[in-house]
View (cartoon, rainbow, N blue to C red):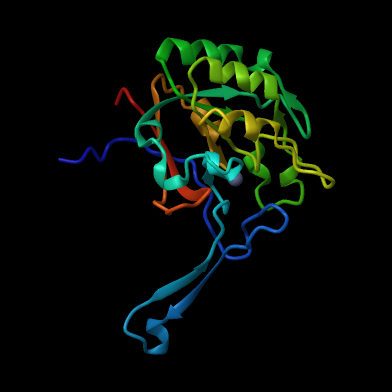
Length: 229
Ligand SMILES: [Zn+2]
C-alpha cells in the first residue's frame, strides 16, 4: 500500500507562462495549446518554450566546463531520496555575502548525517516574479569550497544563482567552484523556509532532472519529506 499519510513539501516554483523570471538572454517560458479539445481536436496537447535554466532547475558541470558531465550523466544517487541539510541564512539580505560562519551549524549536521546535499534558505523565493528577484544574497566562494570539503556534492538555493548578480555582471566564482569539482547546483527552489520551520530531523529530498541528452541543465520537480516517517 502506498503511504498516503506522508507529508511532501514541494520545493518547485510553478511554471506559468509570462511569470517565470530568467537570466538576461535566456529563453522565456511559455506553454500554449497545440491541440485543443475546446477547438475540436482529439486531445489537449501543449507546446512548450523552455530553457535548461527555466524555473526550479539544476546546473550540471557541463554548464561551465566543456568536458564536464551533462545532465544525462549525473549520479542519480545524489539526487533521488537523498539526505539533505538546510542552512538557515535568512538574516542575509539583498546583495549580502553568505559566509562560512553562517553555515557552521549546518556544516556540523552535514558531517553528523553524512549528507551530500546542502540547501541554503535565504527566504528570497518570496520575491519570485518581483523586480528585485535578482538582488538576492549570494554565497562566498571560499565558504562553498569548505562545504565541498565536507563531502557535499549538491548545493541548492532559493535564489536565481549562488553567485552575485548585478545589472553589470553575473558572478560565477561559486558556479566554477561547485561545477569544477563535479558538483551540482540547484537554483530557484522555493519553500525552503517551510522546510526549516518543519522541525524535521531527517530531511530527504528528490531533485531529479529530465534525462536531457548532452544538455547543461534541466528543469526539475524538487520535493522534500521527513526520512523518519
Ligand atoms: Zn542555472
